[in-house]
Amino acid sequence: MKLEIPYQVAKDGDEAFGLVKEKLDPSFLSQFKLKIKIEFNKEKGIIEGIGKGFKASFTFQEDRCLVEISLSFLLKPLSSKISKGLEDGLRNLL
Image (tube, rainbow, N blue to C red):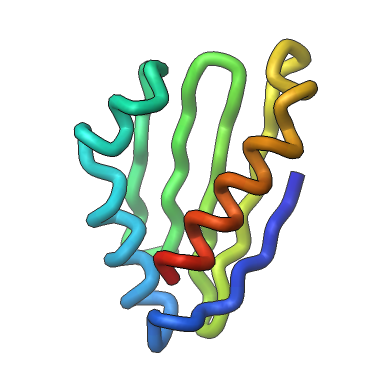
């Protein structure tokens, strides 16, 4: 599943990266009740999250964020709900 989110708040990819990195603190992640490993690569402008049954990648470009999510077979039925929630959250943040 792929999403493309144009920036409305952030001026560029660096600012958007910072906004998302700031949001992904332990208290925010704890609401998902999953163990999620987050890796930040500021040089490449990529944030990756890996958990049981999913992988998410956020690539910050100059004017938009590209999101790619892969879900396990068990999570596939929830893909539209996950996609909608992620897209709405990022549109409000970025």
